[in-house]
Length: 309
Image 1 (tube, helix red, strand yellow):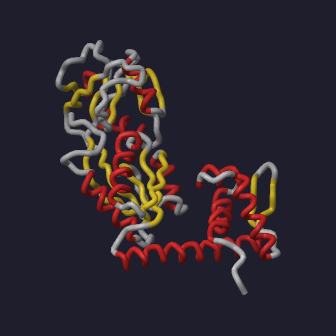
Image 2: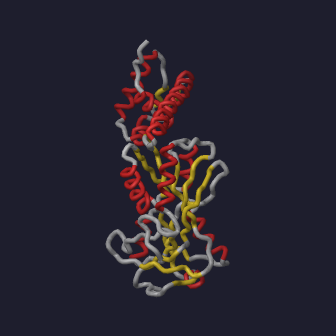
Image 3: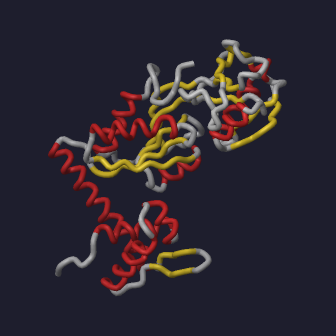
């Protein structure tokens, strides 16, 4: 009996099953909602079964039969992906899709350069990228939505393997008009009484605050933001200093206002940038190739998009 369904239809169905709604699946795989709806309807018509219960308020819910179908469809897609790996082994090439997550503050500096160079050296690779906080990246790894994450050594669970690549010590960002501007470095004791702009991301926030706690100090937090670009603008406008680990080569805020970076004096635990994968995952050829690419580009000698302090 000839097959009357496609792997693409299965891919759209599995995406909808994972996301729990057509709209969320559309955003996740960058395919229009009508295309996903049509694929699901075609599968239901072909096999004569109902795969989802449509719930207007809560999106989609798999039927009991749909859950069994979802499991087998995912196995089939995994097997098809394994054929890509086998073809790569035979041709001695890394090919096929890879989904990479990147910590949100690292992504604008690091991810684009890494991706472009990798795609140029591996023309049959298809790199998808997504940005998120540490918690979001770990959740995406658990749900197999990404193959690996470029992130920090923050609160990593036991099921995650982390390969360290480079250490990023904390440094101080401030406006040229700040009273500490022009110095080579400044101590945490000197900063404690100054207004601070806090990067208010989960785990990052705790890391920066722990520096003060370890030193027996309490920061004077004047502003909070989850967005690095907003943080740079607030600092440039004189709302306070900020502690950061990423060091952009561009020493200006988004509006063109200048910024300065100073060394934070003292012995403080740096953040470590590296690669996170799930312990139980099989490392495919394409993932192994991307890991090797990251090891070549990210090291103590330099990090793409970052300046030396």
